[in-house]
Image 1 (tube, rainbow, N blue to C red):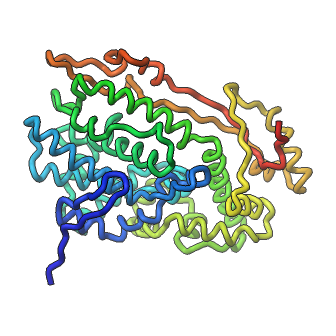
Image 2: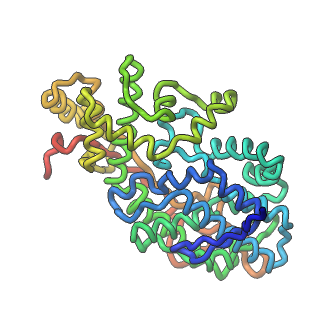
Image 3: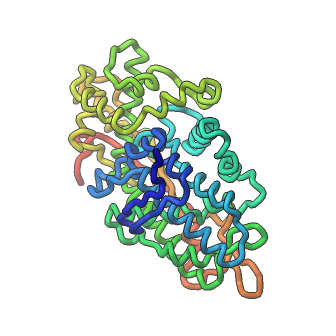
Length: 413
């Protein structure tokens, strides 16, 4: 029985997306990739922007679509990309986020320590390569940056990659934050390759300036929005408390995949040395975490129940941002109030009032910079080529410090 693998997805951002190869179709159909339907792209961003319910599945398909367009654009400029390289590049971008934890970046370091989602994605790709009889070998080389054509890796992971081009437009669309909208099609048409490096043609410099500005604005308005930050910190503390209670022998309810990672201190080497852990990880998604939180809201532990009720009913931490670091004295008043109000000890009060910091850097000219290619063949780094706005200023990281505390602990001013 023959199966038609020339599928088309109707995407609200780009319109119709065509699956370019039968192998891409089979990878999309794989349960590990289908799991991305159950991982929200913006984690808890919907707590601020109700429309932000799109998933990593959406994003992966969008990044695939832009990559296919980029390949066609570069080929039109006589840049050699063989059919095998094109397929491998498309596989690599499709699977670049397959290793994401539940709620995306919010739990990046909570359930497994010492490993980021990119490295977990690589482990998934290597396992899939065995299942697909070595057909992902070239994609893995490109993903790791070990393939001789370095510009192919830059299309997946750089300061101007297909990942960023998609998530800015997609996140802008679903949140309604129009400042994040960029001219992805224009940027793709302006891409070129010089000395095996991805560059931007001179006439595309203004589109890149807009891209950098959009990134900066999206970080402050969406990704690092103070209420989103408060929600993410609440989620992290819920899982820390659950893990603490289980460590003390508490018989805590959780779905089977989540319970395993709460009971066991899994580190990076465990995923490498114990292949069965990858399957357990593949069964873990947003649904496991939130289902457990709903049950924990009625737990006898006042800390866990209070935090979980806050998450379920959107009674989040109040958060205050400022430029100066937070001192011990700044926190003491809130923690003492928590101890008095809830009858808890000093350790438990740290779940109800704590501090931290965030930083935002939209572009790093000291890393692998974005290069502008002029007609005479010269290359100029973006911040030096820009004449309409000071990209160097946008490149400077801005750090903000914050206090988070339960709403009843912070008096409104």
